[in-house]
Length: 195
Image (cartoon, rainbow, N blue to C red; front, side):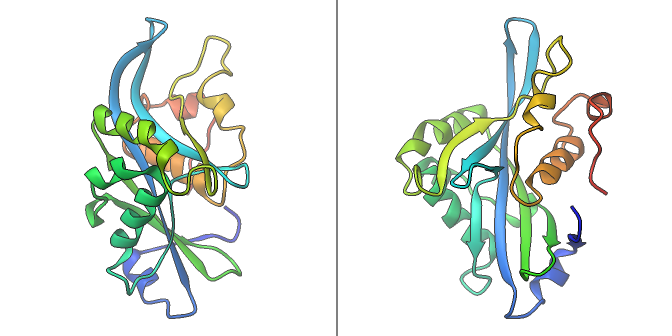
């Protein structure tokens, strides 16, 4: 994340009127199922294919003055994911981090929201009917949190995709910090965590 600096939320909120704020959320749910009857899924984690062909998290630009970051993020989630996103609320307790990039005067706020598997599936099912589906959002995808026997298939192959901004680093940090993958597995996959 060259040139990107991590900010405390309080610092990010007082940057001034020349800064734009974007909020995005990782949605995840425990998933007790097994792939092929032998590979534990552990969690379902959602990302989206964006209009530009890159992977990212649902969300977008918000106005701090219009009810705060979370209100704007929840509005964006409903637009991008459909009405099932109105059945839960991303709140300040779900906040993870803020980063400011060089040049563009944009600060990105990242959240992680734990859902039930039923809520997550409802989001997946309703997303094709969302306002922004087929426009800003081309579809949802689950992140494979396992590695196949060949040592490449699964998460290592998924991480070779193109991600927008700091989405890849946000994903890896959340997988580690929320313990969504087996302890030590990111190191075993030779994945470096953001600092």
